Image (cartoon, rainbow, N blue to C red):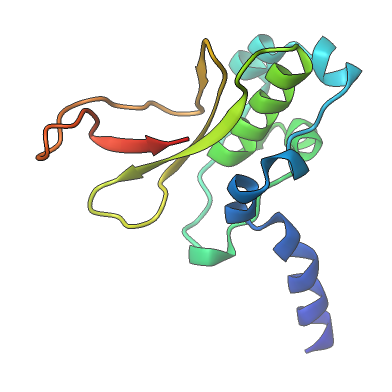
Length: 140
């Protein structure tokens, strides 16, 4: 039981919802990220893998972990993208999540800056019943 609690305690600080509550704690910075070739890695060095649905137990990887493993899910990709964009001095860097009806929980995570949205998947735009744009809603 103690070992299980210790494992849970080390994972909670990286619980995915915390990524959006305190992004500065998760987005890396520094010379490594400024020199990192994000575009090539995105095309050739990254494999998107979906987490098995585990409800509220989803844990985000640190950006260097995602690079080392070469794969991750949407929030892992978003953290790498945000780290790269911030280190390169892009304005307006942030993280967001997308909601898709009828699900009441975020279905996809993105990074963005003033010029681009960085997504490991597609973000569809359409019209909702209320007339607002978006098949889903991305909150930033």
